[in-house]
Length: 418
Image 1: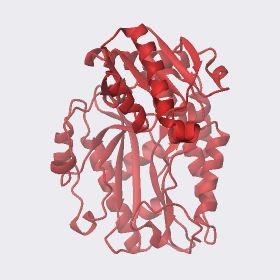
Image 2: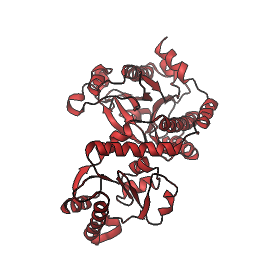
Image 3: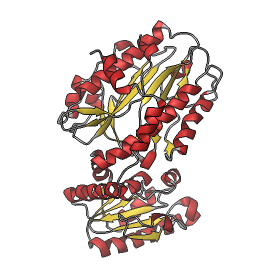
Image 4: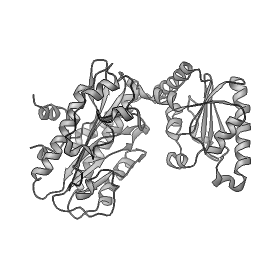
């Protein structure tokens, strides 16, 4: 069986089949998902001797409790809502007037109104507000876990962290326990990921159908966004859709650029979709009305080869360094513009681990182990430095006890693989 046959067998899905799969995956025990995730956080805290976490990242608040509220606003205005997690208790400090949103969540023991310690909220009295915030937190933490306990904190405005340290609180970074908790998914959690992917694939199908010369990148991107929101997804984290010479180099955000005839259109979904789970795959399309050029096909086939080679080498128990050593070597012509990662973890957003290209491992890489229950996104960008166009492809997969299982099922473009 050829690589193309292998993919066709798994990915030749009509829009109706995708709709059916999205509906079928709706049977999810969300209570079990929430309890599993909170249990994972507490397990990682115990392993590191952390008595309490103060969580401010809205994605991590949702991971630990299921509580969802204004994620983008709260990410920009820290700390406007935050969560204390200990071994036996959780207290959510919710944005004023929003306390009712957490009603019924078995992962939250108490909800209180937050005290926003930011310059926007306090103006010239910010230092006083920060000190008052710290006094409140120290009092609560002392009551819950005793004095001199180790407290994990996420990102806060600098004055808040400085005030906490000045109060004698023993602080460690909360990133490690939370990232390690998020890395391993339960079977029930995987249903959420599949539901998000199926919904996003429907959205990408609608985007693909809307491609025509004369439409702008923004108009095309809005098709994806509308469909994601209509299917109860949360938001699209980036604006990574570009066409023609704007596909090279990568990371040019969607614009009012008009798509021309026979251009490539490259897309990275980056969708925070159903149940808050990340649906992250990339595809590159051809605008028509003619056939792709030999150059366009070459770029596409190289990117396709890189993604599938790297998917095939992933095994449970493999170290991150071993993966880097076995990963597909990017041809010199395309190396300068390579995607910054070879693969990465994926859950509610992009997450641990980062898997680096062989050439980048000495400077950027770290070791660790690929474990069953991880979901990984395998990446490729292929475009020569100074070249006219580029191709972005990416697949999302689950690491199992025996190998991997493909999760992203949107078809590749056969006319670009000929």
